[in-house]
Amino acid sequence: MLIVEDEPIVALGLEDLIEDAGGRSLSAERLDDALAMIAEHPFELAILDINVHGHRSYPVATMLSALGVPFIFATGYGDALHPLEFEAIPTIVKPYSLADIERAIERL
Image 1 (cartoon, rainbow, N blue to C red):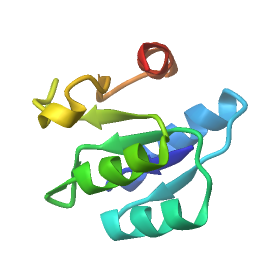
Image 2 (cartoon, rainbow, N blue to C red):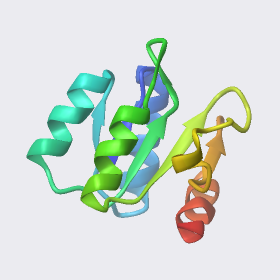
Image 3 (cartoon, helix red, strand yellow):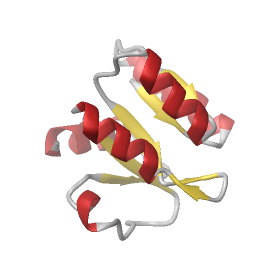
């Protein structure tokens, strides 16, 4: 799983949740790092913080979509209004739990 999150503590917590559930993850704190990771690794799923260092993660979402990789958005600002192409993508609100992530994945 790819995690795109600019807050290290949040990313570490999410990595722990994924590991506790038996999964593996790689994290990127910057959008350009995430794009490079996608080009190098075959991901099965991604969780994208919407606001990463003041920039929207939609370029990462576009690349994942082009590759057929499912993803969910995460935000600390409540439910986000996404561009039309991403309005059906599930969004989880921080702080989230493993159950929140699982429900969002089921919606995919």
